[in-house]
Amino acid sequence: MELFLTILVHCFKWTLVTSLLSSIIAVFILMIRALFKKKLHPRWFFWLWLILVIRLMLPWVPESSFSLFNLFTPSKTDTHFQFNHSLYSDPSFVSVQTNTDLDTNTTSENPTSSNLHPIIIIAAFIWLAGMAIGIIQLYRSNRQFSKCLHSAISISDTSILEIFNRCKQKSKIKSDIQLMTSPTLVSPALCGLWRPKLILPSKQLQEYSEKDLTFIFYHELAHFKHRDIGFNWLMILMLLLHWFNPLLWYCYSLMREDQELASDAFALSKIESDDPTGYGHTILKVIQSNMDLPQFPRAANFISTKSQMVRRMKMIRSFRKEKRIWFLVGIFLVAIVSAVSLSNAKILSKSVTVSIPAGWEVFQQS
Image (spheres, rainbow, N blue to C red):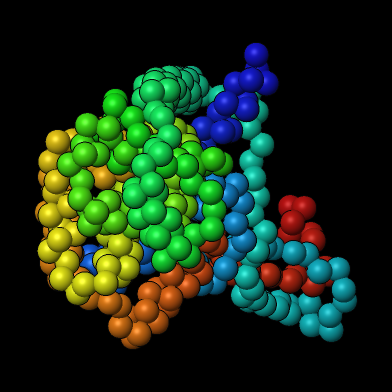
């Protein structure tokens, strides 16, 4: 039992530290997002969120002088008194030497029974219970979505298949994606991490024109091309560990929003006409019946909140192809955030050594 408590407390403390450090990274990304939201392609913000997900996953990162956390880590000063037994001509000689070096070694305190404070144990069990509740809710959500998939059937309409294959070819996607329809879905959705399926709602399928289907296919194929389903799973698994951190939940909602914006931008870049109005009308037609419905981590669909919908419409109206200068700025920002986030602070250690010559030991004994 003591071994279990020791491991539990150790995992809980590691999660708290990781959550705190990741929150600092999240605030840094939010600042960048606020500054460049109107300039950069939405896909760059998603890459910044991916850096946050990677940091949450890593159990260890190297120390670096460029780490963001150096701003929050004070320097460490140690004073060492050493009796030097070498003989000096002048017994009153005392040498004081100051050395400054970089302490790259971090000591880890092994949790023992003396460190198992009752409050920490209670907090660790609350954290464990929260994870259990999250896993149960995730299981129910996926079971509910699986019921929708059971009623899905393959689409055999040659005209729809021709439009879909044309969109795949223009999107440079060679993977096999099964096109299906389901009466229980209210929105087009891409699902399946290993065997992808694009499922259209049966009730609305007859209402979609050829242009509507083209826009929908480009949008969902963008989710596949960007591997959004896999990234969503990674973030959901990290949120199960850090369920107590509201900032990370907020970042997850922004990440899903940036996914939709990036897919919209991809679809608009593939449309032959320069007028984005038609695409905006299709988005509104698809979303108007399912706004504010819950999102499933295993699917990428058109579901958006009202506030997210407003931003999407603004982006669609003002869509322009990304300029080269902002493309280079995006690369620079991703590189900088990676360098300062995927490393720990390097503690600057200052040591002062005092050497006392032979013959002074008598003062030590007295």
